[in-house]
Image 1 (cartoon, rainbow, N blue to C red):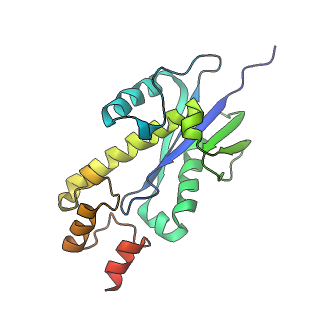
Image 2 (image 1 turned 90 degrees about the vertical axis):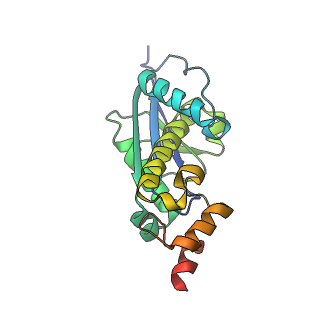
Length: 192
């Protein structure tokens, strides 16, 4: 009998914000076991549900990893390439060789394993949904840390996304080191 296949799910969080790193997570469930109950695309879950499920996923997965690309890497490479870099870092840090890597979206990073991009994978494939939850909770925790350092921007509320309140705070307080200088609203402020 063939050994069960190790399928790795990968997703990222934080492509759209003006500030903070982009995070990615990779998850491999125990082969032959059902996914933990309640796992869905992280965008459909409350912060409390994501936090609870992140603990369950970490406890019940064969392996998992979280990685990121820094603001400096985002500015140097562009957000798509930085997202792919974070995804690659997460997968190669797992410590196991998956038989296949399934990534949310339409792009695959260079990986030493067979990989396939799945559009809307975070909604269709449970192991990608699990990765989306780990990536989102890790990024939200980082934005809380940035809020402690730079409370004037409100990173704890908007997580770096360009909300009207955030843009107002950015204009009022200027650009700190947490910002992605290549993103238009930040770049335009710096060019003034």
